[in-house]
Image 1 (cartoon, rainbow, N blue to C red):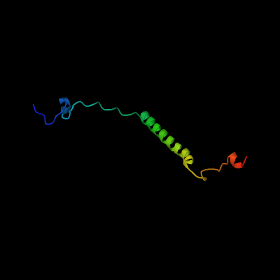
Image 2: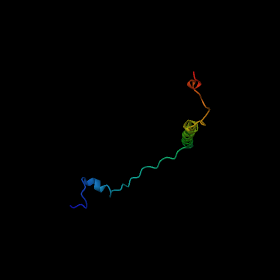
Image 3: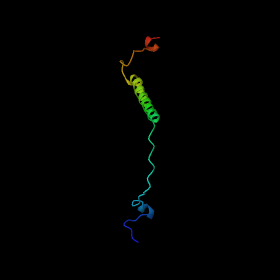
Image 4: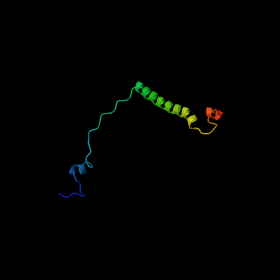
Length: 78
């Protein structure tokens, strides 16, 4: 009984040649309400990302043009 290569377990070498003739049952098609729900969830996620980007952009800008100039009380010489 000679093997072409040394394998610690014989059944792992045989798994490459084994093919099952059992196929899983077909997945049921999603109903229109499931499609609408998934679409709404996707749109909600995308809208949240776009909204956070729009609200976060002013905070990421730097320099004096990033909004109205603010002065602290220490700058007034008090």
